[in-house]
Amino acid sequence: MNEELLGKYKLVVGMEVHVQPKTETKMFCGCDANIWGAEPNTHTCPTCLGLPGALPVPNLDGVKKAQLLGLALNCTLNNDSRFDRKHYFYPDLPKGYQISQYKQPLCENGSLSLESGNTADIERVHLEEDVAKSFHEGGKTLVDFNKSGLPLIEVVTRPCFRSIEDAVDYCKKLQVICRYLGISEADMEKGQMRLEANISLRTGEMEEKDELSPYKVEVKNINSFKYMEKAVRAEIVRQREILEKGEMPKQENRGYDEFKNITVAQRDKEEASDYRYFPEPDIPPMVFDEKYFNELRAVEGSLPQSLRDVMEKKGVAKEQSRILVEVMGAAVVEKFHKLIEGGLDAVKAATVLINRKDLFELNVEEILNKIKGEGEKVSDTGEIRKVVENVMEKNQAAVTDFKNGKESALQFLLGNVMREMKGKADASVAIETIKELLKK
Ligand SMILES: [Zn+2]
Image 1 (cartoon, rainbow, N blue to C red):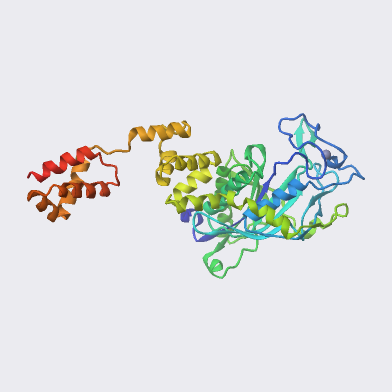
Image 2 (tube, rainbow, N blue to C red; image 1 turned 180 degrees about the vertical axis):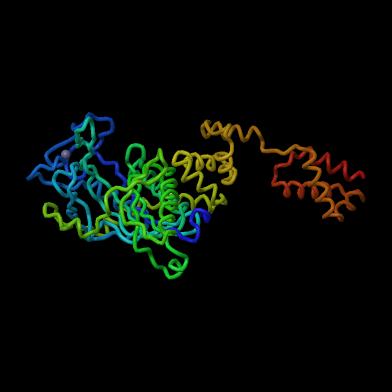
């Protein structure tokens, strides 16, 4: 973490991430959810336009995908869950409320292990509907309802991050999980994953006492990991300046201006009570049983961490398993396992996929043939000579035996050389070298 940036202060970050699950239809109506590139207002119906009297019917695939994400984040899946109305007025929300979840979300109290060894502390995973999109053109405001009513999974953490690196790592891991479990492509450019960071600073003394600052600033609608890092940095600088003047930053929502690399004030942050939540009367409460939850648990083997555990048990280093699973992705993981089936050892397979750019585009069979062709042999006489000298020094008795006419001592020395070099030495070069050195 950047000490210089923080001065005497400590960083506290909590994340709210929205993921749009990939479903055929919208969250509460039958409209086609694939709106990417569509003409404005072509994917609409009375329900997602918010017309009076239209009844919402929950999309079970959306529910299931939110639960899968909760499962992947080690959450408790609630047997009883329900939707609530969250009231606020906005031109892109004509019915005056958003259907969301408040008191009984689908999933609660989870965790996710981070690369640093720290843990992200998940408060809840709930489902809600997206709102429409407004455009401001020539002094007029236009609204496109295609996005209105799309499902959104919201994942909320507690204020658990102490560094920008941990917060970014968490978001990246969340994206990877969504992709491996088929929940969402989580393509940030398409708005399928949106980040909001709650940021505050506190003193070291407060950190020791586990005391939070009396304010937090929510930076909204961050649409790339890079911008997230920059937005948090910009916010640290801004808040620190205020604190150093002896003042307290205002609790508010801010947006990140990527061109100026600063955050700018939006509206004041609402308290939960401002939304006047109450249970959605048009949707009955949902009840799930253990049998259903157990069926969901079948995906646990496809979790990125499970895939990494399998690799690490085969001897692959932690950083390599991270790159293969979390950076390179599912297709490369599959290739990794096929290379092992083809006879390559796991460590070698990992190294080939990560470091051999020349082999990367080839298919499994071609890679295996190339590697076999190379024979993996070391025939550098200098390198072999060094090992032979070392082996002879350690095995003086065998050297004496050979000089006394015991031929088998040569094989014994060769065996030791091959073991030292893990079988990679070119045997004929090794024998010649041993013979040469034995003559001395
Ligand atoms: Zn609709």
